[in-house]
Image 1 (cartoon, rainbow, N blue to C red):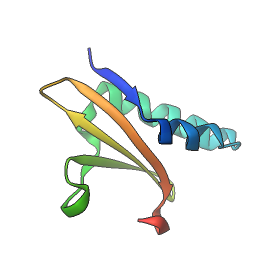
Image 2 (cartoon, helix red, strand yellow):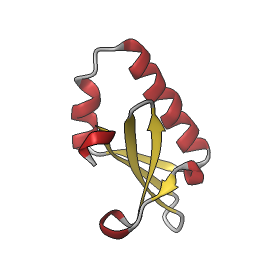
Image 3 (cartoon, one colour):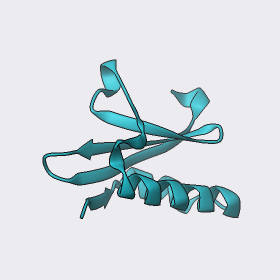
Length: 82
């Protein structure tokens, strides 16, 4: 079973979202990531070691460590803020 950690910044951003469809999309995507942590696109350069999945025009960033069997959700942001 994969251990899951939610970063404080991630929790703060998610708590501010009022749109229920976006909340449901985030919930569904996090469940899929927990089931299969390697579904996200691996990042390069400055964000090496993290992965991203798309939720509409937003990005959900997370880190997956196969050795530790750990998924850490890091950030949720609009694609223009990359």
